[in-house]
Length: 238
Image: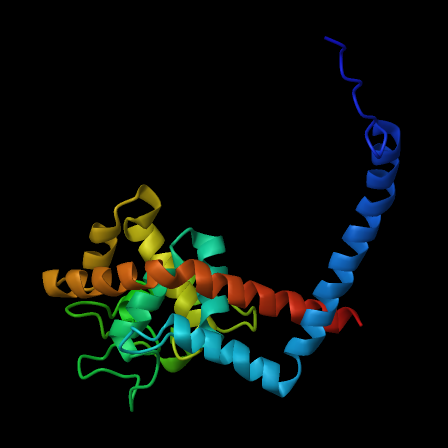
């Protein structure tokens, strides 16, 4: 039986390689400009509203949504102290319902967005600190980074304005991350750190409940935040 002749390929391997070399840069260029176009579209109010709606959809099963403006602060604090941003969000949720309480001062004297007792914020080595930790600390001392370092407090001047203020959202969140890291998170002991923040088993359970809830949606929320940051960076470059 006569052998069938193999049909020649329509495109030779050399031509295929040539086309790949030509088309690959073109594909990358098209993708790049498509990405830029999307960033421009997101600045349009209608598209921006869609992005906000996406945040709402992701958090639709949460009893209280994590405010979008706080997430980058949590994430930045995580980068600095290694405390999961979702854990910081859980503490913020439990302590002051994401800073929506009528007052940010508790009946026991805890202050600010993350509810620090003055002696914990400034340092228990302060000569007036005892008992529950209210102390007799002046307002000037309470926000002075040098005084806080002197007395071993956890207060942090996160925005580098020369003041460590528990009523400043960035300072408060970074201070909470600083405390939790040293209280056990750095050693992988989340429960120990949470309990040290507030000596209550019920409190630990509540924090862990929200922490796990936020972990379930964290990847999607991070993607939106990072995408938004990239858009802002491109607009600033322009």
